[in-house]
Length: 205
Image: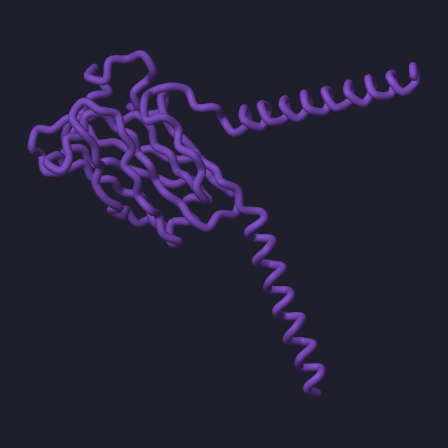
């Protein structure tokens, strides 16, 4: 009986280790970025002080990220803005946690500067991220006359790299896949040519 118990315990531990290993192996660093032309995010080449992008207290708005369905264990929300005069200016960020509008913090930044403010998202947000995280900004929450321009919103999982905080194009995941696939094909072609050259040299010798 003890032998059977040990065997079953060993199998259970092995199964758990395999499951954890598979989860870790499947986890992929990834970043979903929302920017212009969505909402009032600043497009490239546009004056950050221009309307309708330079917004004040009565011009709050929100957006939704694309679903991230790959396995992940950590997540951050990163919002790039221009001309956030923290700590005096209070611009509050909310994300929806199972349908509940939840305050996650305030933007940080400097006068006339592009920069990211980062917010750690706990495990309760993971299902929302998997379905497309909803985010809202309360601009100048204390109605003190502050104005700012939002540039990008990036949900990063498992350490996915952030784009530059300035306006501009971010390659879509499919584009990255094409880049990587192209590099793979180039590598295969180079290896094939080397093999052919080696075979030709051997034949001539």
